[in-house]
Length: 211
Image (cartoon, rainbow, N blue to C red; front, top):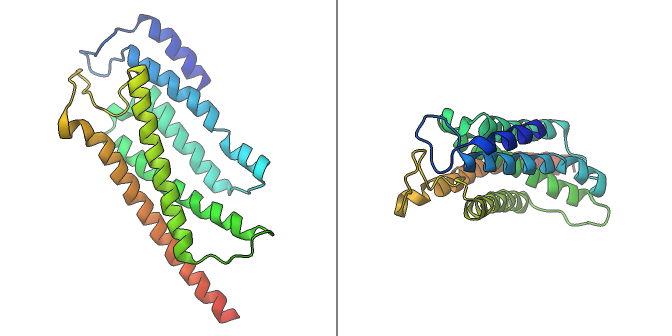
């Protein structure tokens, strides 16, 4: 990602302004977005390490690997290699993927809290699942806010309110990308939360039999 930032800064100097008339040609706003995403990526890639070090949470290796793969697919492949335009439904796939990942993280957070020596409360599977759902949904909404602010401040097109040819969308079409992202987030979250809820109910039954 650091190399991609250097590449984007160099290409930004000679890139055309406005919108592109050629397929897959990148303009200045595209390179600005690429730089922004790569810088953000270089910051958030260290979040698992900082969380483990500061709070003592043991994040499973598999979840960390999935997290790194997601960042690679979203930032390097999506922005640098332009997969968002080259691969159909790439954005929707990543939103569904991230929703599942964040839901699993929500379960992990509650599990950490419940295992704390200071916490003596036994949380029900429904409450744990509700927290995971709310956590993942909130993260998805915050991402859409981030996209809106980036588009407003840096004149990028993260929310796809403008076509590749530079046509500004309006009305229902202008909201299409944002609402699709939110709905995909909800669908992915519901699937993972439902699986997590059924797993916890099964574990609860097993523990009650042992007792």
